[in-house]
Amino acid sequence: MSSMINAEEFLSATRDLPSVRLSEIVLRTSQYEEVKNWYQAVLGVEPFIDTEDYCFRRLHIDYPYTQVLAIFHVPEASVQQAPVAGLDHIQLRHASLDDMFVRFERLKAVGVVPYQSMNHGPGTSFYYHDPDGNTVEFSGPNFDDEKDYLAYFETESYRSNIVGIEVDPDEFVGRYRNGTPQSELVAF
Image 1: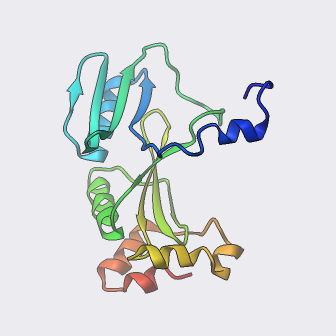
Image 2: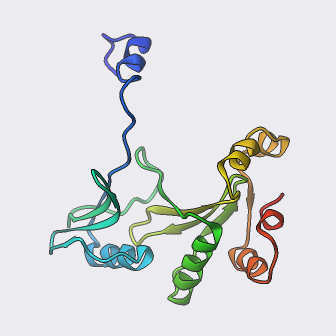
């Protein structure tokens, strides 16, 4: 932020503009084929553009809005070894927990498993590392409607534990597949 602009001027400069939507996530990698193939498999989307130096995977289109994952081959790029400033993770949201569980089951069948799984309260998330060590979070809503979702943020359960609880993905999905109602499954 420029020292010439005070905080309120800075914050109000765009406050009245229409909202924007996330359009692109761009990754650079020296492990181009591995990273490209990993995202191709994990996301289950066909190539939109695919060259030897870059590729685009279109996740969603609602013209004029489109969501694209772009991967660029940068041979000199190195894998991050420790936390650094910058992007922490990418979250991709499913319409339902069931949709997320199907993706989990299919990925597990080909050897891709989450390194962490959390019931955050408002939603449940399974966290994966791509070949470069980037974190990709797949999440699903714990509530069927926005009213219940928003109400959860007012509960003592949320106020006393905003992070949520770690869950075993196999046990969590297994309970769901064995008939545990979602409302019971996600309660803590």
